[in-house]
Image (cartoon, rainbow over all chains, first blue to last red; front, side):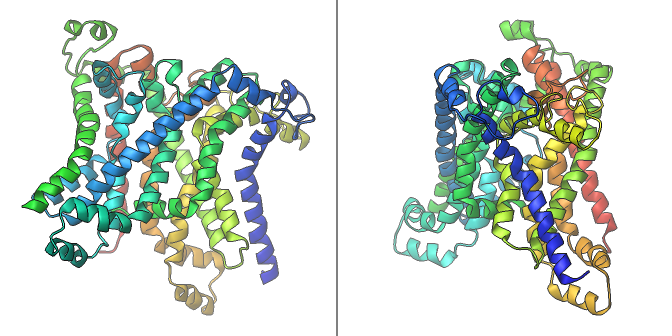
Length: 273
Length: 292
């Protein structure tokens, strides 16, 4: 094969693959601006004939989308902020602070990674019910406030901090909390960004647990609300596409802005052991 | 001494969360699966009875459990190889020195991964709509017979698999790209001098060198695909004729629709045991293949 042909073939395939990956998202955007009924006509329209914001207006005015958006933001932000603090502290301690049983405890946590989260969901529901947390933000936030994956990620990264640096600070008489706040935290900044965006995206996109724990509409997150709306409005494709745009756009924009950190974290987290 | 105390203070918040809201419920699930916890026990705990392995025994005699397991295995056995092939293909294209605009293509191919399953499932449901969907329209225009994608019990699962491949291939693509970049270029150079074809290079250099990456990616993807739930929940509600009811879908209905929490816990545990057995076997088989 001539180099020119090979070049054409490879780039052609890439264009085709990228089109398949992106086209459904662009189509969603296009249909979301169509007037009601246009998406259910033949031949299927690709672009709106008379672009309109009606679907978005109806979502926010009548379907309570604003409320769901706020719910999603509150839940995802709380999970991200608190779990970031907990995972950072634990990951750093497992990497750099010697204590008895450290190795064994960490092995135990890694071992627990093989247990699928769904095994815990039924008793967790009962536990939260007895705690009075079912159908509150807390039911979704509290169980997500620390993750084994997050601790693992921070530990991997924090292992690279030179011990001399910490020792020098100890000799100067700095306490452990001060060392953590003034020396360790600045060094962990890249992994903080990575973990924050990972956590936020996972919390935003999470489906099964919020579906179980949030029994009343007033606390629904966007994915739960969208699933419920799509069962009621099977025929209203334009409205559903607008709902999908509202759900996807925030995380897509976040990813595009911080993509470098996200992809690095993906690689770091997949190198087990 | 001071360090030890600080260390425990640092890890305690995370340990409380993980212990109370994950490890304790896992143990409780095992206990729960040995009881007849149902709506009556939910109302009054005194109605709870210990039934030993009854839940497991009953499940093994329920056709719906076996069909749910069958659908899940179908999804894993067909979906994982397809996903990995798409990921590896995309990674090799992106890794080629001839490829242009690499950052753009990488972002475009990865975009479906960060989207919300429910939202993109809603899009695909529309694309696959029998009457108004673009896909059937394109089939018709090309003179192909149209398909009732999500309404035909034979087609619903393949359609969900196609959707899952589209949604997930970008994740493993990034890991494969890192694996490909770690292969020394001299190997290909030497093979070229010896006159090896592109395909021979792929078979005798790329695939063997990627083996560790391939193993890790396969295990992670298999575990993920066993947990099929949101896709059938949104696209087919487990139907048509329960042809897309997965094990987790069954667990969800059993537990949170019918409130048979004991029986649902047994479903969860069986899924866990199967996942563990499958991934452990994959690990063992791959070790056996290695030269001592």
